[in-house]
Length: 235
Image (tube, rainbow, N blue to C red; front, side, top):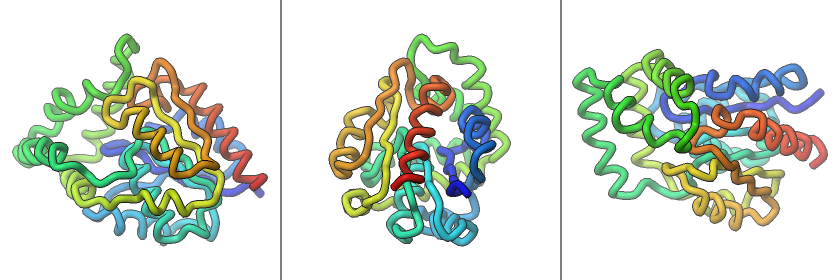
C-alpha cells in the first residue's frame, strides 16, 4: 500500500487550499489534512499531528504548514518518509515581521478579521496578473470559517518559532522545496537557501505563481508533488 500523505495548510487555510492536489493524489493513497488549531506553539501543533499520524508517512506543508512540518521532522525524523516544503521559511520570525503582526492581532481582537485579511494579507498572496478573485474569495472564506481565535493562536505560534536549519541539514529523506517565482512572503531566495541545506532535495520555482502555487498553478504544483511522492516510495 502507498504511504499515507499528511498535508499541512498555511495560516488561516483549511483543506480547500490543497483541493486540486487532493483530487489527484487521494485516489492512489490515503491523504489527511492537518488542522493548525488548539495550540499557540509550533512544537505543540507538530506534536498533535504526530499523535494522530500513522507510524510512517509523507509530509507536505505550505507556509505556516511548512514551518509545522519542519518541527514534525525535528521531533520524529524517522517517521517522515519524504518532506515537501512549499512557500515557507525555515528561519525564526524577524523583529520587523513581529512588529507588523502585533497591530494585526489587535485589529482581529477588535472584530476586524475580514478587514485584516482583505487589506494586509491577501494582497501579498498572489502573483501580479493572476485571475485573483476566486482564489482571494476562497482565502477569505477559509479565514472566516476558522475565525479570530485561530488567527490569534496561529500568530502567537509563528512569533515564537524556532530556527530549523539544523533540522533540514540532518534530514536524509526525499525532499521537495517548491515556491512561486513571485512569492513576496517567502521569496525564492529563501527556498534556494533551504535546498542548499539539503543537497539531496529538489528545488522547483513555479512561474506565474506567488505564495499559493497550489491554487495559482495547480497542475504544475501537483506534478511536482506526484514526482516527489514517487521518490518517497522508491527511497
